[in-house]
Image (cartoon, rainbow, N blue to C red; front, top):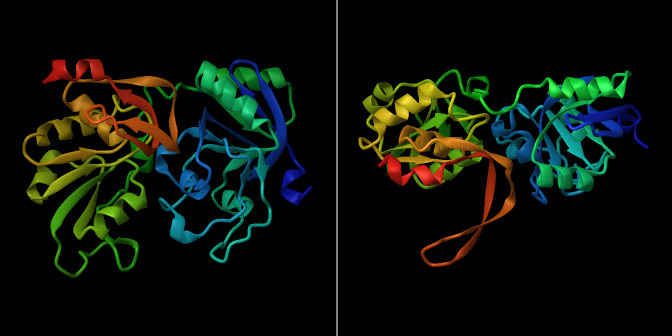
Length: 323
């Protein structure tokens, strides 16, 4: 047993279930909505995805940390999730690109996690009954009190978390540097895309830039007037955490841009676009989180395997009524 596995920890859920395990990372207690991700690889991308702010993420794949973490695979500047749950945390990564182990990276960002629990049982519980509020703690005390504490955690429904993860200042994405820059990159571009940062992942910016676009990222509170004054070719609404309906400033801005510039939304951005046209959203039972979500094209019947990460969805029954 390695050093970071020696401290006992507990995962306490609002339904009264308590899982014992071993602490990983740093801290004595963390809380959030407990969700699961079905990706076989990409745990670094999960850890650094701002969409997971306020959530404790359980990985269904049993061994996590075996290829370490490196700066090139970061999806944002830091880890955003509230806590991390794994069956087995690998203490000794093997990868020529690895700079930190899972333990070192969690410690760096003051993130507490738990290993050694029955993740299959936990995921089955969440899949059947829906997501649950929970806490991870290394504190000594009455287990029943931890359950009561989990029950007092606010629901994700109604939470506006975008302001916690959005950029404070606008920036451009430099493809050559593979990094955000304050000055416009040199060169000719096919299009000018303004990206609203509700918790944007760096790979979205990379993908846009690789296609010859000038990618300009703006804070979530940027008004429609400020964006339209830039005369962009199109607007991208990014992914992000929390409930879309309380993000009223974004819904208002999107509504004013509809019909004046092409708009495309991903994840939270898609949901905000739905709110702007009057469709509204609803909370999913356990959400879709993973790199292997099947989606069928209704027109031709073709099935695509997609990467998804969302706990809310647009109310499709109201889309046509809103037109």
